[in-house]
Image 1 (cartoon, rainbow, N blue to C red):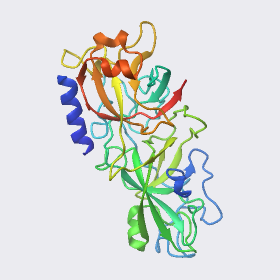
Image 2 (cartoon, helix red, strand yellow):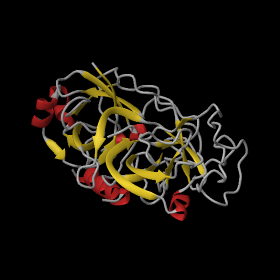
Image 3 (cartoon, helix red, strand yellow):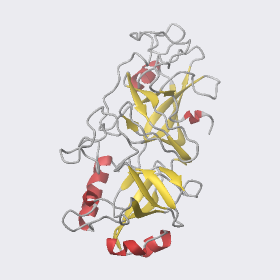
Length: 336
């Protein structure tokens, strides 16, 4: 299902009722400019033999152009689309995801407090991310940024990436490949794995300081069509494709105004306890549970039942106004 068809589905529902591949997203941490090693040149160059042996031209990520990222355009956003009224950050403006509406406090299946980020609607069809390995090696090429071919707003973009292993020659020079086109031109072998990684692409300088466990909260850099991009990585639980899809886990939510009423659904905001940010949004799984996934399948219950919802059993017992209303990327970053 495409992001745009998912968006239409949500708006209708809301209105009516392996190895160290596993670098997955991991590449170079952004922000310090010290991304090069002794295999790369110190100045950006024009590639003439992309990735082909020791004479290949490498590109220094610290000096390369950077892609403009906008998660809140009409093309990229669904629930979070920038308007004059909501003041969401503009194109390439750093985003502080540690503030509302990007962080939510809810309840776990047993009623304990949880917190999760809100990265908007995503498809169950993952996008590919390309991780380069030299022949005979089982760790990614040191210093090489991973390669993607879509950013927010592009057709086929997804925060969830299926890892593709790319095999390069033993004498491959790091960062002589900076695009999917380079991989194709060089004729490198590509192999799709079943590993998924949750790596939202964000503007440079964005922050999301919370992680479940000891996950790294820093930005990671990658290549997109010869430009550098930054992204977060969330590693609270291993993810694998099911069939060709990102797995789903349910969440039950209540809004200040029920869907179907004037101003109801997402525009009204989540219902919270009086004088508190505590919602009674209930997630069905947490990291470590079988079936955990940060891609939540949203079910909306009647806000008249809000006070009676305190855990998963009571959430499922509440009157359901909409089931499967949307699929949203909400990595869980705290659980009591």
